[in-house]
Amino acid sequence: MSNVFKALSDPTRRRVLELLKERPMSAGELSAQFNVSKPTMSAHFAVLREANLVASEKHGKSVVYQLKVSVLEDALLSFAQVFGWELQNSEQAEPQQSEPEVFNK
Amino acid sequence: MSSPTQPDSIGKLEMFGAVGLFAILVAAALGKEFGYIDGYVAKRIFGIIFGVVLVIMGNFLPKIVRPLSAQHSDPVKVLAAERFAGRTFVLAGIAYISVWVFAPPENAMLISSLVGLGAFALVATNWVWLIRGELPRNQQETKSDKIRHAMFQILFALFWVFAIFLADSLWGDHISRPMGIAYVFALVFWGALSANKARLRKRHEPSP
Image (tube, each protein chain N blue to C red):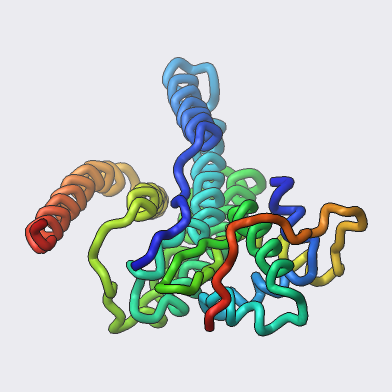
């Protein structure tokens, strides 16, 4: 559960989850919505995967994400969005040597 | 083509939780049988447990997703329908528990049954409305399908329990008891359908 709180504490990751509520999207489509570097987006995706809030599949050369939240997690997401919930320490996603995402659209 | 992330599996916590709930049901039944607890108290315990199960099933239903390659041609509709179903079951489950905790015993069974059956009717209507005409793109069974099948069986059992409670409230034992027996036949029929589906799927699988 701590992974879920960590994942929901960042506004970028919350926005990713809101976008995935509309439909499954590729890593490239999601990254295009944000003005952050690709390594940073990769780190955000890794945090979301670790929290088991998204499912990822490789479709050819791209990775497609779909939402995987329970009703309780959805409620926590809405709560965090309304109250602008953010962690204030260094637990934010940092670019790490994680598996590289393929950002093809 | 695709390599989905590890599908959800039923962990030890979930197993212990399920065993614990079942143990409480058995304890309540035995307590009523041997006179340790009142019949109404036993019914309240059963009702609360069924409500808890409905809440749990509703909470996790949207989380057990199928890989995109195995979903309907429009996964957006399926995911929206499942999110609606999850929220409806959670809210209905909370309402169901509340009825059994606060309502007078003589009314609790009827009101709670209507709440439970109403939730199923709402979910089924929404599902049919959203999914109408859509068929699965790929009939191949995935690992998450097994968990989903188990969840659907539990939800089907809850639906039948609510229907039996309603029948018992309106018409008494002579209707509700045959319905309990009919559930066994319904399970056998479901099992036969699933086995036939698996056999057909195997027959149509491409040979190596």
